[in-house]
Length: 241
Image (tube, rainbow, N blue to C red; front, side, top):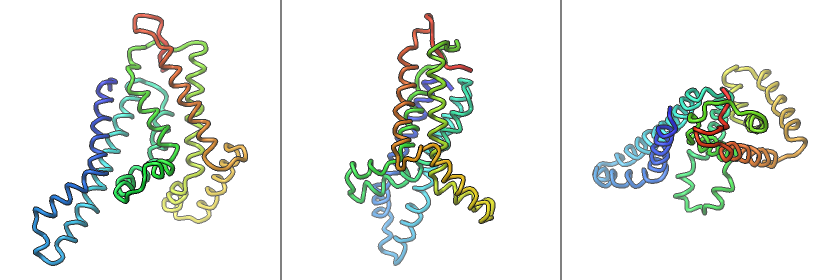
């Protein structure tokens, strides 16, 4: 998938997300008024449940699938390491609850500062990767050398570090292991593994600070890679195969 198409699909997904997260409530209000459901006892509640409990969640899910599919196709087209695809899915999973609840928080009149303060760091990792993939990287077919290759590996290392730490901090991952294996013993072992991984990768520190530091390094590395690239006719600094 070329950069222009990738950017277009992400723009469409962003517009669709805003519609289902925020503006869908206005559409629901119009439908409720036009349907005249108030004239039939109990029908408004059924209609509201169908719109809010079925159509809206599936709409949000569809937009997420568009983002994931476009990114996977873009990574495959560029022939870059599959580790970026793994990072994409883990960051997306860690961000999903925030994106799903954003509209409800918005209409609850919670100020934006409070909403953003609860935003997972993984959202910024995800946004940085999507923004990076939106550049025309396919115009630079040569493999980076020297310092640029080192910077690329630094970006890959921080991505690996961040999604490993995200898994270690994820209560959803523990619950998934419990549901899939249906074994409390395996779930308990996985929980111990999470604790040990948190301690090792966090170097004894608690809270989001290790991820924030990794995010700064990650964004800096990607920015440097983009800034040092030259025109396709010059000595380019592309992504390695």
